[in-house]
Image (cartoon, rainbow, N blue to C red; front, side, top):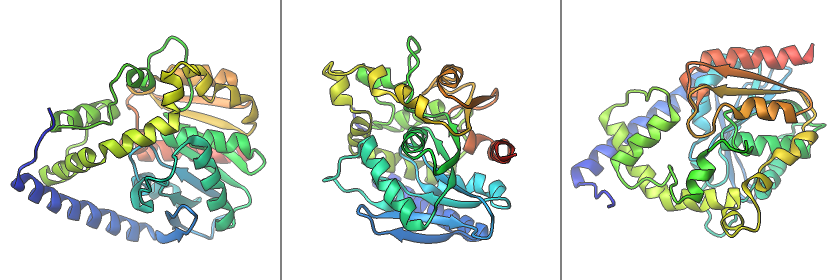
Amino acid sequence: MTFKPSMAFRAKAKAGEAMVEAFLKKNGKRLGASLHTHQGPPLMAWSKIGSDKKETLVLIHGFGDRKESFYFIAEFLKERLNLVIPDLPGFGNSGMDPDLVYGLDNYIDWLDRFIEQTGLDTFHLAGCSMGGAIAAKLAAQFPSRVKTLSLVGSAGFYLPGKPSIYDEVIAGSNIFYISSPGDFETLQSRIFRKSPPLPTCVKEYMILKAMGDRKWLAKIFDELVDMDSIQSGKISLEQASLNHLCKDITMPVMLFWGRHDSLLPCETAPFVEELLPRAQVHIYEEYGHVPHLEGPRQLAGDMLDFIYGSAS
């Protein structure tokens, strides 16, 4: 049964939204982030942090997320890297266009045009969760442009015999389809090993937003994964995965994964390592699905070691 928020709940959620937006704006200003808009189509909002470093890292966020979630790790990356952080179409401030098809190939085309417009010739690339799948396919398609690839709890790959969120959706349960505060708490417990404490009004805002976005997120998820083809039996989960593209990802790759990831099992990392020509694995024993939020300083340090170690 869908939860029906009271007027008081909605009022507190509104206050929570203002608190979140003020915090993110203040954090972006402190980091020196400049905000830009790629006109597309489709329109893409993006942040740039730094411009005087030799190397640039493009960061691709995960499902249901936004560019500002990388501000925590940016704190520890910005001294050595320029950072380019887009809101993917369909998320954040890039808008929601119901007429678009949010398939993986379209995301690659959109990002290709975006990167070309920003003037980047070669760059380092990192993606978390859904952003990992997009980053991996982008790297496979443009191997001469991507210097290194960092994948954090990456979606897109399939480990036979090990259940993941994809199997759950096929079985009729999408963890991102939020209909109640209880559903939200379950999602938080699945994303984090230890859910972070939130002010009540912020949590109520996040619950209300997740409920309002659930049909939109279901559309993007189904189109991104090509769930219609999988559920109809036209293709298997393995055929829909990026496993077959691994041979084309020829730059150095680091697979960062949380041991307690309950959405995409960490056993996927060593499996994918064997498929990639030049890959390493780093497992975080203390984290879940989002090491960039649970341990941003540690992940940033390890990512910098990887990026600059690969160049030596």
